[in-house]
Each structure stands twice: as structure tokens, then as C-alpha cells.
Image (tube, rainbow, N blue to C red; front, side, top):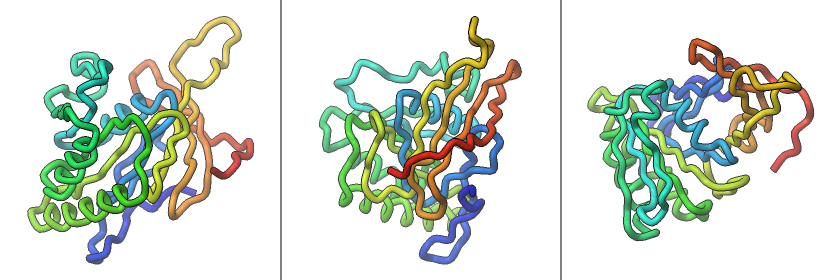
Length: 218
């Protein structure tokens, strides 16, 4: 079961969903905040951004040396679409994301966080995203979508959905011929836990197929 292609916000206007990689018909509701976790969470973010449109605000801590390298992402999306914010204080990470979502000026706002946030800040982010969606729709723009990247298994309270990505074992016992991952939907308001195998093709496209082995609910 996939997430619906449209999500009806409080105002009653349908928001087009943001597709996830794999061509599986999975989507992220706009006007809401979602969580990506796992060892390959940044890869899941980049693959999702490659299917999006418009500018992207990428927020990360200034005291963390790791950061996206725009020329290295050129095979997935134009580096000119990326705008980076590097707050100096921990409390400014979520504040920056909240203000960006509320403005409705950017269709995708991503925050790379050192730990999952508690429920109250996530609720504030949802409210900001809903307000930004109303502003964007009035201007004829795409409603904003919030993505938070969190370590390990994630666990942010109150997110619309939580997705986990990790490298998958190669189908060959000798060498890996193409990149592959296991994507899991750990939590969603409108869909049960599930998982899929994603593979990158020689043309750069990513295809996916369901994995039927049972997945424990988290």
C-alpha cells in the first residue's frame, strides 16, 4: 500500500505528492514533515530531490564537517538548485527550517539533524508547513515539504512518515554491478510498514521492487 498521490490539508486544497525513488508509486505528502533515517539517509534525500522541482534549502550544523558537495550531486540534480544554510547554534537548525517552511518560498526544505527532535518542535514544523502551503497555493507555487535527516533508526515524534535506507547486499557473490539499497517505511499515518529493494541502473535511473519478508513495526 502506497501513500496517496494527494494529501488534503486543513484548508481542503489537494497537495501533489513528492515522488520517492524506485518508480513504485510512493509519495510524500506536501505541507507536512517527513523523516529519513538510516546509514544511507543522505542518498535517499538526494534521490528524492532528483525527482523534485525548484530550489532546495539544505540546513546543516556549521560545527559538523560533513556537508554535501554540489558538483558531486550534478549527476542527480543541478547544483544551482541547492541553497545551503549552516546555523551556528543547535536551536537555530529547527528555527531556520520552521521559518523557511512558513514562508512557502521554497518547495523543499531539508534539515540534517544530529538527533531526532521531540514532539513539540515537530508540531511547530507541521504548522509552519501548512501555513507555507496556503501561501504557496495562493501564489500558484508548489507547497513546501519538510524533510529531516536523523541518525540510526530515527525516531522523531509526530512526523508524517519515517523512511529508512541502507545499502543492500549484492546479488553477485563476486562483485556488485550496480548500487542497491533496502528502503523501509517504518512509520506513516496512512500506510503500514513495508520495504523495497532499490537498484541504480546504468542510465542513472533507480528502479524498485517490493520485499515480501515480514518487517516488524517500530
